[in-house]
Image 1 (cartoon, rainbow over the protein chains, first blue to last red):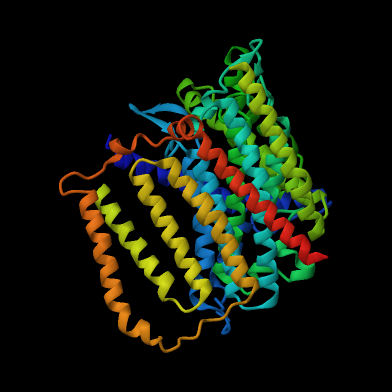
Image 2 (image 1 turned 90 degrees about the vertical axis):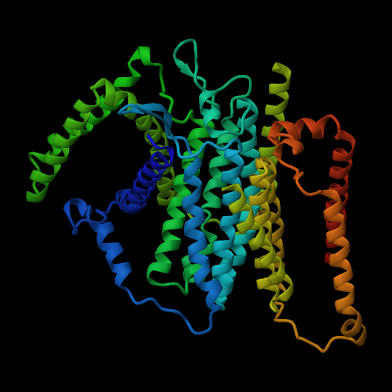
Length: 396
Length: 166
């Protein structure tokens, strides 16, 4: 097959999947937050509000696109474009799975394997701050400017512990290529315990993982570190003056960044697409089992439901899940989709943690936020890196 | 393909560089400078120095220029006023510029004779491993000295800031 054509097909698949995820992750977030707060969340548009994202997108599309008169026009328009395009680029180096064979074509489930993949992601993420800063400055208005300045200090401050946390697993894995980092985690202690960088000898990266996760919350401007857009003091922070699709771009960028950092955490610390336990204990049947359980649960809850719409929509979803579980028993399908399942399960768990924390923790005060990174998180990251370096050097 | 990419980004770098000088507003100048940095990073990557390209973006575009932009925004610098140039600049400016460009062109012509262009092979592979090995063996002393120099700058900045506070 023509390599350029293959590249285009792969890029289209990844972009499509990413955009679909971006569309639906806000539905998932609203539902989870709602259930944490004992509410129902979106419920009216489609079964269980499943068509809500489509309705929201249409609403944003048809809203009037305001361009305030006092803004720096070029930078004001550049900022959302910059934010969303930088947020979407990083996904191109994330490996989702091993080499697979589809209809005689062998290819990696990854768009591009750079030999400095980790640095590429760091470089792109270090540029994302411009989207926020330019938006705040070009708006030529108080609240956006305050939000932008806060955000710049926050993102620069938290990038250091993030870099330290990323460097430690690189020492353990001995590579900068994301694909090789995953492949280096491909064995099991005692035949069953995964040698992910989180647990890997000689230097288990438990602290590194925690530092990465906390810094990632700040880098993506998520609660409890969402100071740049703290709505009770800054209206909406850096995107106060934006409306319609330009607002939607910032929204999209935030979620795309979230997906990127969760994928990075999966690759660096949690073994990427590798299963939790080896294949001889049946890890290849885990996806089928999980889907079958979900299908059975939907059937069980859907059939005797009090709501008329649930009586057909839930069982239909249940039957679909059971069919998917059956498909996972076919060896060809299993070989392609099982790694993807593990990757998505780990990344999904991390994304759930992001949403969970948003529903649980209050926002920090600004001075607490800055003191936390400079006096605690950064020293912890450096200490972790030095101990890791020492242990790796002793072993070599 | 490589030649086309080189031409595009070399042109971009020159355009951005010109704009850094020609723009009146400091923030726009700083933003064009980021354009220069990123174009240079692409040129490094084109030469096979992927590590250098990533470091260029992380350090210059991602860290130093962020600081530049923030400081310019904080001091709220307005657009610069254009004044009539001094008499010396009016008369000696163009000849000096021509002389400078001539000297630069001569040096480049002597350094890279026609038909022998320094390619990726001459620079080495430029991977992270190569650079790390070179830094920690051949160039260990300069590398450590540079880090001490940076440390001195940091300590000096902290001392100056503390003096202000008292």
